[in-house]
Amino acid sequence: MLPRFRLPISAAEFLRDYWQRQPLLAPASASGLDVPDPNVLAGLALEESVESRIILGAGEANSETPWAVRHGPFTEADLQALPDRNWTLLVQSVDHCLTEVSLMLDSFDFLPGWRLEDIMISYAVTGGSVGPHFDQYDVFLIQAAGHRRWQLGPHCDATTPLQPHDTLRLLADMPVTSEHLLGPGDVLYVPPGVAHWGVAEDDDCVTWSVGFRAPRRADLLARITDEVLAEVPEALFTDAGRGLPEAPGTLSPADAQTLTQQALALITPARAECALAQLLSEPRHNGLDFEVDTGHIRAAAPAASLVRHGSTRLLADSTGLWINGEHHALPEDLQGLGTYLASRRLYEQDALKEHAGSTGLELLNEWIEQGFFVSLE
Image (tube, rainbow, N blue to C red; front, side, top):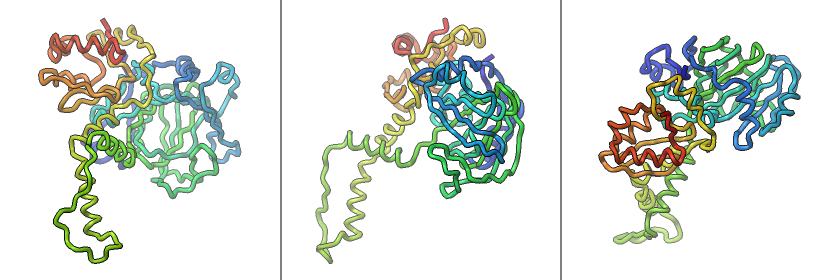
């Protein structure tokens, strides 16, 4: 079975009433969560190219056990030396490494694909937790195995007091506004800024965290500016027809406005869209070297003939297809192919032939050779 999630309400209702507004509990709304098992997750934590952490600390609010964090890659000895209680292993961007995990993201087609970031998976023993905190992005917390008790608190911001810790941003105090015990298949949506604290109720507690991309506005501006500087000629400021200055030693408001207008005029919609598409099509982690378990996907989706590698990020535009930050121009008769590829992660042969034709199939074969897609035939 492929990993899937279904909203318990209509997508329109969710976007109107919950998205970035308030949490939503969705009992028994996810399935197909048996891959990866804890051993596979632990194996990823041994890889140098994979971002992983272990957080140690008691999940009880009145505990005096200090919180600590260790960063991977780990060794088997590191994992075997962990205590019986109160620790969590977190592996980032598992979907980039395990393509079968990335198929969960197709369930979130009620949002633009560029808005998705990655799937982090945590494994915890009894008492394991990452502590009371808040995120600056949306997250769907999907319980895959075991049970985790979530406490939710108020909205937080940069002024919210934190515990004195060098690396963990833990809340100094978290008033509890609601509490939910999640079992396998249960899902909890948490908007940005909402305080939350999850504690494993038993061993072998596995939680998927589907995180969403929320670029910093400064990064958007910087990328747009870089695109402009790379594309425009070295045009100089002009001011023909100006009047006499009232005070030659000052920068007048009129001159400041003209300078600003001439600079901003370089940011055309086409240049801005190109810069943003490049940024938003870049994967968080390059995991193309990880092999795809085609057997598992074939068994779960026998009609599919092609799968997008979990580390392939696509974004279609009016002139072609962005693949992992690089633009591939497509002729008009292949625009539909780009849109089709970017809209999902599993592809059926008949649909591919319909959108691709012979020319498109040749192009697809090139992308398969580069590892962006994997044949299931």
